[in-house]
Image 1 (tube, rainbow, N blue to C red):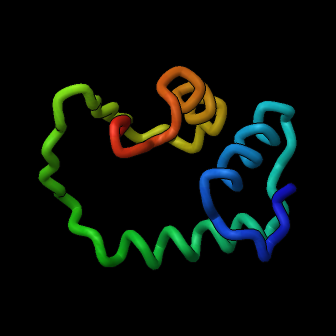
Image 2: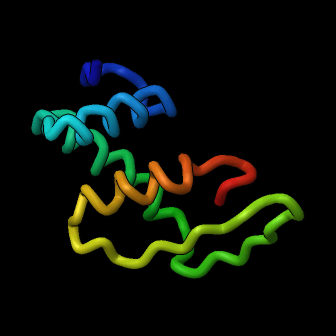
Length: 87
């Protein structure tokens, strides 16, 4: 369930991925909310970030997906969601 007042947390992302796998789309309000929150987060980030990868962790680098949502869902299915050990 992707109610527009629901926090954009891990459970939200998992529900969203489930919908995409079923071929369902987001409603416009939810899509705008995701974009607005991402914009607010990213505007304070540097375009180059140095990271330290701890032993036992991994870093998956993904280039521009050119809007291919199926490719993103496939990558998340293969590699798992980002976490402290899965960067």
